[in-house]
Image (cartoon, rainbow, N blue to C red; front, side, top):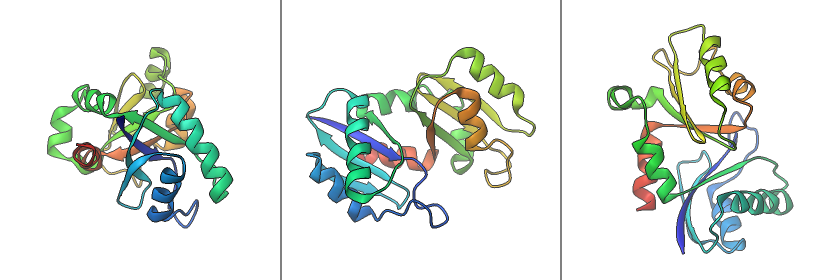
Length: 179
């Protein structure tokens, strides 16, 4: 059995794609995941599973979410080993330490090409900074996320992959919850 961290994309935002964390834990249990736990109300979960392929887990959970709760959105799943690498590979450790609430990691369905990352970097009109490694983008929002022109829609369009972001505080809390 391996421990996994799962992030739901775009849930519980402004009354859209509502899911209670108890519903999420119940869904995970129904799908055979063991010891499901959630963090916050933004669709963060930790569980144990015998599956070894995260893409297969994502598909299984997305199908169950649609079938059982009539909710269509992405699951982004990482093993604890992948989550550890995601933390170690952080290209902006000073920003993560200095201002973890304005530093985000965006887990992506697919690893972006270098040219796509460069195109995203060139499209930035503010003080934001972006890096990427594997299936993660690292985003520094020194002036905050709310008014930034570096939106999820722009990031996904430029990188050619759907994803969901969590601030560094949540990334570290999920690592602790996963043990």
